[in-house]
Amino acid sequence: MIRSIRLGLAFCLSMASLALLPPASTSALAAEASARSMELPAPDKTGGMPLMQALAQRRSTKSGFNGAPLPAQQLSDLLWAAWGVNREDGRRTAPSAMNKQEVQVFVALDNGVWRYEPRHSLTMVLEGDWRAKLGGGSLVLLYAAPTASRWSGMHVGSIYQNVGLFCASAGLGGFVHASNSSALDGTLPLPEGWSVLIVQSVGSLKK
Ligand SMILES: Cc1cc2nc3c(=O)[nH]c(=O)nc-3n(C[C@H](O)[C@H](O)[C@H](O)COP(=O)(O)O)c2cc1C
Image (tube, rainbow, N blue to C red; front, side):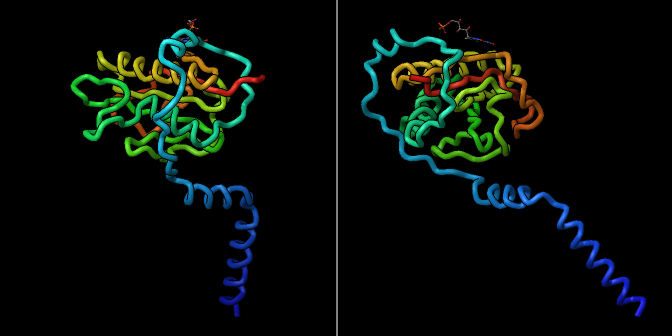
């Protein structure tokens, strides 16, 4: 008798504690499980503005973003321009010392921070909307590399210039900023000795 009362009490307590869980956390976990990786559409490697015009248009735009997410195709094209594989041997749109490719590009979207993979897909590394903490924009790119390497700044600079030219060509705004680069320190899964060196906000602009 006493045993069955104890069991009943334990059951009630466990149901009560379940009821205390916010419903959002369950749905967030379900979303997390199904959205851990995301295929991107194949990049469109045709078209765009002639290079000399893009160079003439390249500039930092620090305000006037309308906050709208980029269409999937434009996100795909932007990431490929940044650090995509552009040859069959796996080399990239930006050069790297001894082709070691010691840079990881992350993109903060409205639903999380994602790592851009060489096979042109995204892997979620952090849930939530971190864009405002990272300086704002439709998205924010984070460039991580070995902190102490003499090459890291050069590598990252090549990549953000690719993005700057892509933005000029696509009529997007954006700017590079060091000020928010430590906002996610300790939360990204980086190799030992790596850090985010700089971030780059990108956004479509108010008409
Ligand atoms: C390495 C680097 C760090 C930067 N850091 C910041 C920053 O922390 N905040 C900011 O508002 N702009 C930052 N900028 C953007 C510069 O202010 C901008 O590039 C400069 O004014 C020249 O303007 P332009 O890019 O339109 O030619 C940075 C640019 C670079 C290349």
